[in-house]
Image (cartoon, rainbow, N blue to C red; front, side, top):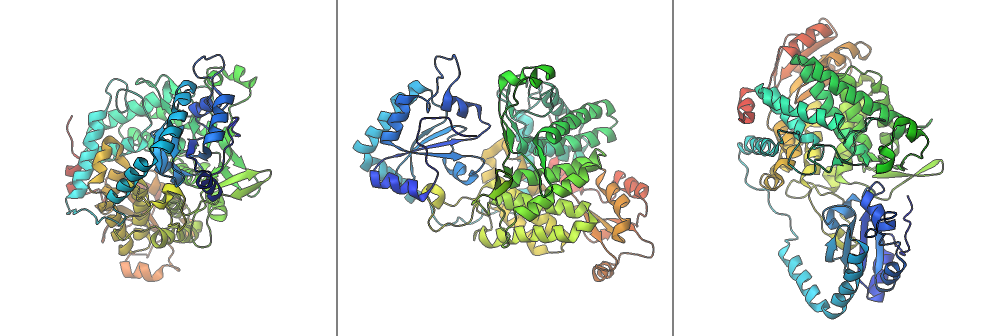
Length: 619
């Protein structure tokens, strides 16, 4: 979407920074997103509103910016690495920088009256107090240790404490009246509900499942859900989920769908069929929206658009009224990380909700990502940008989040599709090998982006984000089990231990980290299925059809994997056969889906009592 402003925006580039230095001007950095309502307001205002008349479309403000600043515009979705270093707490971000890219002052949305006051003040400070600003920046840089810190001391008990601490933070923040966390704005917080489902699976405490169901039902039946076309809006501005921010994000759908699918399956097993049906109707409606509105399929590509714009007036209309109006703008760029999350989501919904038609869609989507977004060296291209009938790769590549999500999607596919298992494992290995070679620090954790010798601005500062590290650690854990590589599992655990204290400051937002630590701290429930590839589908379906917080499904061919089968001692007189294992202990073989389902439902190979105690919590 073009920025309809009078400001002479530059791209984030060496040329723009050189221009700022040559003209001795501060930089005005605007970080926005195509789906961001208040970004649009800052660009062009709200018709009829006397206060929010538009900042960058105001001729006087734009002229002042063009004369006294070098304005640079960055799209958050295209450049998450820049956003990670400059975001001031939301979008839009309005940041004033030195010509070297250090922050002088920053804010989020600014109304025209605020911007008129602020702009000359920044110019005055830059010209009159420059030495003091630069002195403070130098002192700040000296305080920031450029070397990597050593991982915190973490004994074997830290994992249980981390899971308990985060779980209790979620329970303390829970809103018993409306569901969700806190008493203000409500965000989906998908991983928090996944953590409660994990705790419920360990303890059987019904209040944990009650909280998940209450929240998921509220998110899918009140104002945060589009009850006309389906799909979730980005968040609720009110505690009761009634008044949303109207953007629809692919990322949110990709993270919510698996949690809903897991809750549906858990509810059915708990005899809560009515609640399961309510949640299932929400999932089906959301899938209808995704497949009808955000999905693009061509002879060579399958992918989902990144977002659909906010438009409060449009979304207040009925279906018939909407048909007469232009739909809100859709961002048709392909984002590798969000689409990879969708691969994993489609696979889970297909398995847990008995929607087998989603499996070939997941395969086509994964094929697009592996063919179009994976470079020869294993770096993942962050996005593909449509231009006419072609898609052009973004220059941004090798971001930690992209490496983690494509690796995880490939590993999920390897456990569902026997004909693609080996190819998917190779893609996962390529993505993880790149991360290990280009992103891993000497402390064992991973940087968010590859080193850039001539990085602009604060991109010269390398950061290790906790949640992207958690995502990569989970992918390494899974590959470590599927490939019998203990070193990968050790590296995953080492990366997580680096954040053994930092996670505390995220409180109830630290659920992604807690889930990764939970899985790194114990053996998974491993379902090993042995047989000719053409015969495995019924057992694979059964292996994935019941919820487990930590399960690996391993597919072995009696010819290609003969050495491993013999080494492990699986009895293969009758094939296909499925074994439920934990470590080196396995169950008797199951030869039919019904036998395997019964064994899984009975809890053969269930999680250890030690972790059950770890997750136990009271009200």
